[in-house]
Length: 488
Figure 1 (cartoon, one colour):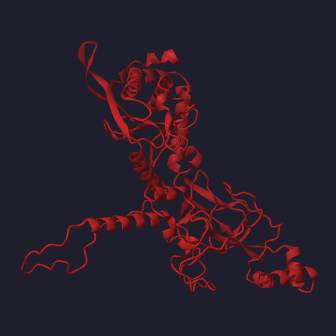
Figure 2 (tube, helix red, strand yellow):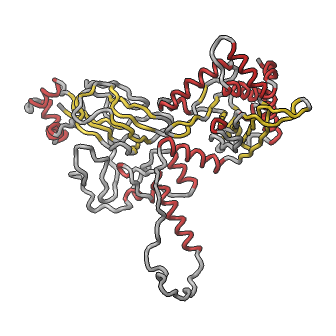
Figure 3 (cartoon, one colour):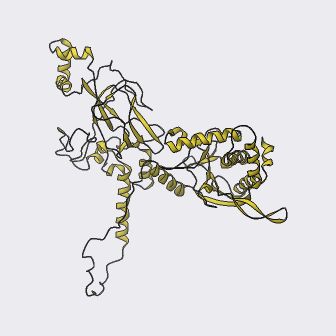
């Protein structure tokens, strides 16, 4: 038997880290090839990660709630030693064994530790795990320079914490990683962009991740330190201290009291939502316009549809159908801005996102190719994706690629809001609750079902006239659903 290490694979869609939600196996369990071993939460969804090896679990890395970067060890599995390799290990006098010993000097020692220096080519595995991670051959490891006392990797469940045996860091300096030539140890493109936007030199940072990997927290810490330095240099010179008050503590006599309260880590879905909203506010010059509309006829039309045979139609599906028709008239809002090329990109297809509140936070599933779909199809698709969102089984592909978002916050009992654009899209339509209100109908005061519609748009892609035209068309379709017949 020898051990193979299974690392957190690339989960696709640019994701660089994941949080362990629940272990599905324990140390000592027997696992089969491609058996799910751990449930992890990324910034997109909760997924089960299958193990490409079959054998006995000998160690797990990371407790539930731990966040790991892609490439970090997840677990080790003891697999059966192939017959050919075992024979070579037992016959030290053969030319093959002598050649291997002459080349490495430690081949037998490496095998005795349970981890062969060169895993046999015939080792069985599943070949692929999720995205971009294979098991056909072990990846070459590159030695990285680490700061003194830094432990590489994470401590497995079966090994006590402490320095890694044989890992000598004597004589190294804390800035060796910054002085060494070659690429900076950063995986996440978001971390690189954050540093670039704030003129942070990544080579001056000591990474807190495995192998000196620079994490987002390291860049944010450097930003806070720079801010404190600027604040200190801008502070006015000290003046004469005020006279002491009897019984009052002396100024500067003790450390400043920290604010008390519960700290909640911004990670997983919540962290992704926070980052996306902050980025939207930073990068998009948004504006909002709104209008009240009489939705009485829309509700009547829906009641007539549902009275007939066939699948039930939701109000959200009708609003989505109206949105796709409006985007066909005003394609400027089905776009995004390429800041690098300084170009507006008008998109061909309409991939409609809709906001869904779950126990894990707000997610935005995407209905692919929504343009031209009828209300029955849209209603079925909304229901399917909503159930997956609540169950936490949405895939990253189902949460990305949207071109326009519909946000029905009226389900929370509120009338209006100013939506934040789902970056990098160009617009979002917000829908408030539909409630009975006094309304002038056909020249007389009447009680009608009124809804407030809000459109937040990127002012770079269009002017207020285009946004107002889009919103007015949506309102007209809500008030008179027959208007849609022109585009059916």
